[in-house]
Image (cartoon, rainbow, N blue to C red; front, side):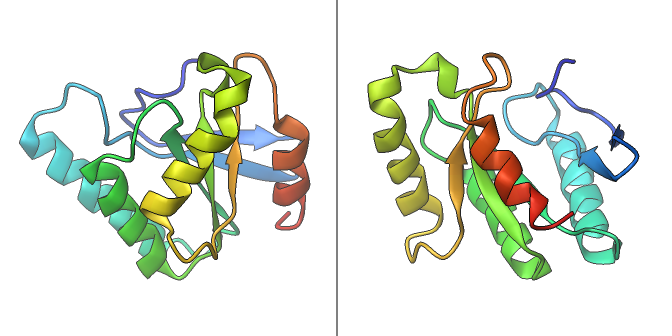
Length: 140
């Protein structure tokens, strides 16, 4: 499964219990400004109008400081007033000794008051998954 370049909405049925919904990316993809505006409107409309959302899993890249787009999306998520969690993805791409430091840096940048949980994660190596699933289980 190739995540990170989503151009449309994708629904993933998880054990007939719930759905993960992958919304279009806004970050490093090669979209025109017009496409970025359209994707932004689409995401905003989805977040504000979809009543079935239990939890937003907001992915950021652990290897980089949050971008302006990350900050903009964070504000969309905050204004949706829906529960959410920050996930610092690609944790396998940095040294394990640097993971906590990178997570703290992202947390301070996006959520300085610290009221939103943040977890490192790696879909490639399946590390940190138990903690993430324990958190998600609270919302299923």
